[in-house]
Amino acid sequence: MAEETKKILERVALIPVLRASSAETGHALVHAMMAGGVTVVEVTMTVPGAIELLRELKQRHGDRLLLGSGTVTDAAQAQATIEAGAEFVVSPSLHPEVIAKTKAMGKVAIPGALTPTEVITAWHAGADYVKVFPCSAMGGASYLKSLLAPFPELKLIPTGGVTLATAADFLKAGARALGVGTDLVNAAAIAEGRPEVVTHTARAYLELIEAVRR
Image 1 (cartoon, helix red, strand yellow):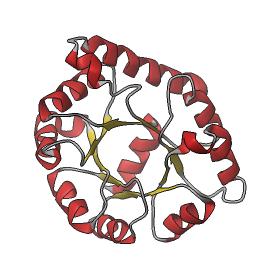
Image 2: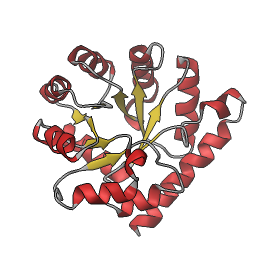
Image 3: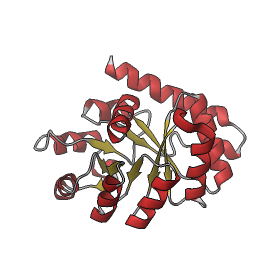
């Protein structure tokens, strides 16, 4: 199943990072993104009742939505989110025990790292992809390109500072997928009763990714 998850992640190349103040907002955001064609979502542990939200999303959307968990920092969290339906587990930082637990359960491990030393350490610890976070703080796409020069084998997912304006540059620099936050996962638009803003942005991201690949 992990191989299938990796294929989907690289084909879609978009991982919306879901942060919301309630499960209700979380559901609304996912609904709005799916209306725009999004089929992958990372539910962060900072969402109240995140595990339950993962379970509900799995029940509601089934195979139409590839679910991951985010901001996972210990093995127990990794296990709980996988049992709730997560097919990939993302961390903002490097936790070898999270990678080990994720891999032992047959899922895809995406730890966070920033410096060359952290990135290669994460890779050697068994990461399937390395989330480069916060990528924009280090110069964005040019930093990603710099990391791949000595380590061309790495599979990197930039997160932090990825927007519609910067997405193409990240993809051209070698990103396998894009971790996108509030630029797409716009809780304010949901609160204002404008889910179409999220739907429209989702569509714009997917069109941009397709255009870059062509």
